[in-house]
Every structure is written in C-alpha cells, then in structure tokens.
Image (cartoon, rainbow, N blue to C red):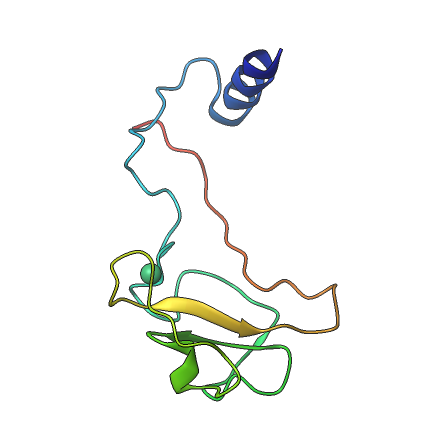
Length: 105
Ligand SMILES: [Ca+2]
C-alpha cells in the first residue's frame, strides 16, 4: 500500500514518460544556500541582526548575528551558509519558498 502510494505520487510529479533524475541531482535552485540570498522567496524581511521576529538572513553561524541563537555550523559542508530565521507569530507568512519544475533529463 505505502509503496503504491509513493509510486503514484512519483508518476504524478514526473509523468509516466519521464526519466527520473539521478538521486544526487539537486532540483532546488540554491537549495543549500551556498549562493547566499538568491534563488528563493520569503515573506520574511532580510535582516542581518535576525531581529525582530519575522526576519531571516543567510549565515555561517546564526549566533554571530543574534546572541539568543545557539552557535551552529552549516550541516551541508560544515563551513558553508544556511538559512536562519527569527520566527514570526504571523503564521500566514512563508518562511521560504521556491518554484522548481520537474525536468526530463
Ligand atoms: Ca548550506
């Protein structure tokens, strides 16, 4: 049952005639944020201090920008960039979003 549902979803997303992309291929533009503040949209405001609530910044260590945040490094490479946000109480705001179309290659 579970794998049948997964297969149905894959067919819906990629189409029956499409070739599935290699698993290692990242279809999300700047999905690891290594290119900085580009390739995505946010309803949050870009703010280096990550303050007030409803702000974000692309960081190598969130603690360097907001003393209330724990010091941690990027999980992708250990020394890269990641998306840090100070959550907004307005739950209608999208923290991060992107548009990525399926490809045939
Ligand atoms: Ca990253």
